[in-house]
View 1: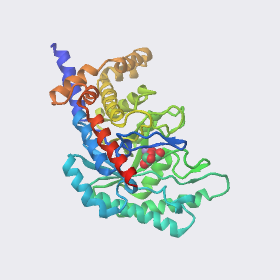
View 2: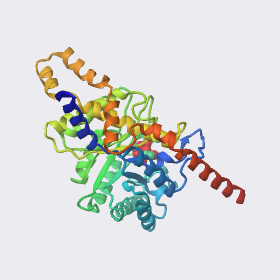
View 3: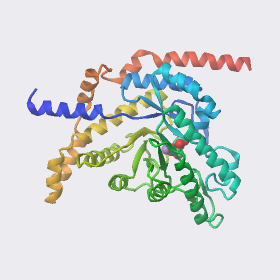
View 4: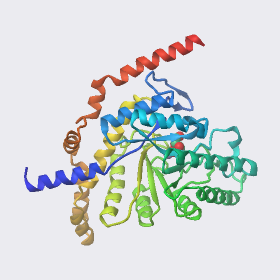
Amino acid sequence: MTNSESAIFDQAFKALDSFHIEIPSWGFANTGTRFGKFLQTAAASTIEEKFADAAEVNRLTGVTPTLALHVLWDLPNGLADVPAVRDLERRFGVRSGSINPNLFQDQEYKYGSLCNPSAAIRQQAVAHMLDSIEIAKALGARDISLWLADGSNYPGTQSIRKRIGWLEEALCTSHQHLAPNQRLLVEYKPFEPAFYHTDIADWGMSVQLSRHAGPQACVLVDTGHHYTTQNIEQIVAWLLHTGMLGGFHFNDRRYADDDLTLGSIDPYQIFRIFHEIHSAAADGLNLDVAYMIDQSHNLKGKIEAMVQTVVTAQELYLKAALIDREKLAEYQQSCDLVAAEELFRGAFWKDVRPLAAAWREARGLPADPLAALRENGYVERIAQERGSRHAAVSSYA
Ligand code: PSV
Ligand code: MN
């Protein structure tokens, strides 16, 4: 190996060692669209099964030690469920990750939760926020990631400004209850389920609300929550510059919040985002970014799709890490546009899969996690076990 080859290996290994990504419990469960669900026998239907699947993904990839939990879906009894979850963490060697409050399912929330015109309903929603924070504390989880479905469908039917005030109040109260090490991640989304106005519609609103709430609040960027032509990496650059970037929900989209596999439609987009992060780190910015996946796989096998996503995220992260930043800075400074662009695109086109495979082998992981999953029979085994359990339950019923 030449000196420059070994330098690239070192750089690649360092980058891959520093990259972890959180997987979502809901990515293993049966989900669908509003038109229907296609059920998979291997889908997880209990929190135990979700932990088991998460452990399998972590065994194969080595970079997914935490599982994001959705409070109502995973801890329907709130704090009372914590000891059981703790037990699962120990059994499966996977820790609880970000805690996601659920403020969109209860019937009371038809006209909003934290922004509902009814003070009693707002109070109920704040109480759920505080419960979620307590759950996170009890689980030793740092991040509370809040996605708010609130909004309205028809012009003139709600006071947008009053709702801003209610939201500010609710987030301040929530912030006051955070432990010193915890963070409140504020996610934004331009539309759906509300189709006229969404109370936290874009990153600017998330920044404003986070700043108002307090120093432990910051922004969560879900890559699927942008209008079609939006320049997401520019948003990321601004959030990095202002110290407001808390983390990501990665997925891909073609039309709206499609929840498709990361990089399946536009891998260059994710590469450009990672470039902003690597270059901010190289410039000495103090970063604390939670990488999380937020996908639901309706057609693909769930575990296979998750492994594919994690591997793709690593590859794109690595490609961006290997950009020759000094040279790029020179080209940018001298406005040598074509040279800069070619260097940038060249890094994107570089096949980093052999480097990633070498890193995995060096870390005692399967060189090709997807192939290893196909060979190890895990999906077939759980499909059989879970399928027969479902059959037993339905024949009993
Ligand atoms: C909403 O579209 C979202 O992105 C939020 O992060 C939710 O928690 C997640 O999807 C799961 O529905
Ligand atoms: Mn999300």
